[in-house]
Length: 404
Image 1 (tube, rainbow, N blue to C red):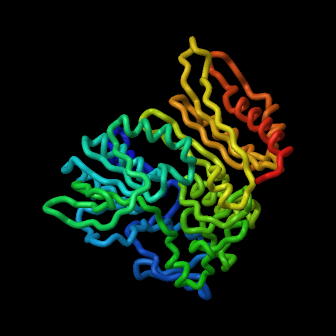
Image 2 (image 1 turned 120 degrees about the horizontal axis):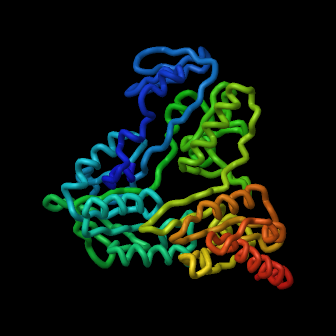
Image 3 (image 1 turned 90 degrees about the vertical axis):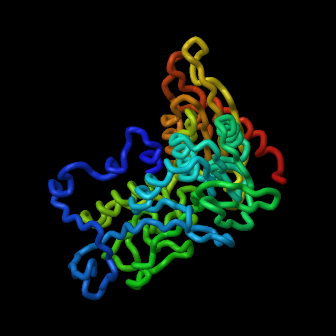
């Protein structure tokens, strides 16, 4: 939706499948129809006042935006985005009327909204977050700083970390009180996270996990074996430690939806392995990608890790070189890769794919450094492997020194 709000070639209508897709696939589609009950004993759902029978069901309930409890919020000129396209339609009519905005939340959605607001002519933009850097789930502070510099050069004021004491309506705009200053803006957009939409599942008696999402097994079955849950509403886990987590990402929704559909039809033929936490986005011409844990999050999850950061060139100088920044994080003892961050003005998709596979398959650093990957002076291809080799050498050296 933020891409459509930029006013580019993408429209809100492009989000939907075109033409007669559902009809051709023999799918009965009910829009603007709320499912209010799951009658598990009778294997029926109640939707729009009607009762429908099911043999198996998949819950893809999405998530609900979370707004912090800030004193003074009154709903006026305060916006979020959810899976309801009505939110985007409202924003689409509001954004062109104003010139200044504060975006609270420096994750992917918050940054995408900054890009959309700037594309629509907003000249005074603030990005605030309680964390010390942008994209805190994907980037460590040292790597995030490279993109933060670019954003500041483009005119975005970053306030990190930020504490919002209160918000009040003033004339036609909003006044945001910080500990040391006040911001005057036309509107506030909240990208402060989301919580799994589980009320229907809870009402139906399904088990809710410790993270607040719907508990599922490796086949994505809920506590009722005839009901599966996928995407934002399901309790996920990472492939590195197996720890339960929330993972509200479109890639995870696509993978889990595919696996649940296969298991529903084929009888639990495909176990879900967990998420490698892959991420990629574009910010002012720079691609930012990550996989696995940041160094900070790895330590928070109890892992003893080391890291190495390298800046090199994507190609030989005469072929249009671009800097590429790579940070890798590995276990000190096992020497398995547990995290990677890559930033460049060139394409980084291939590098992220390679690193995601390495983490998901737990390929040791020594084997990863010896992979026979392609290289050409005009195309490049060695950048990540150089970082792997340097990290491997550091891991060998570090293993000879007692951990402190």
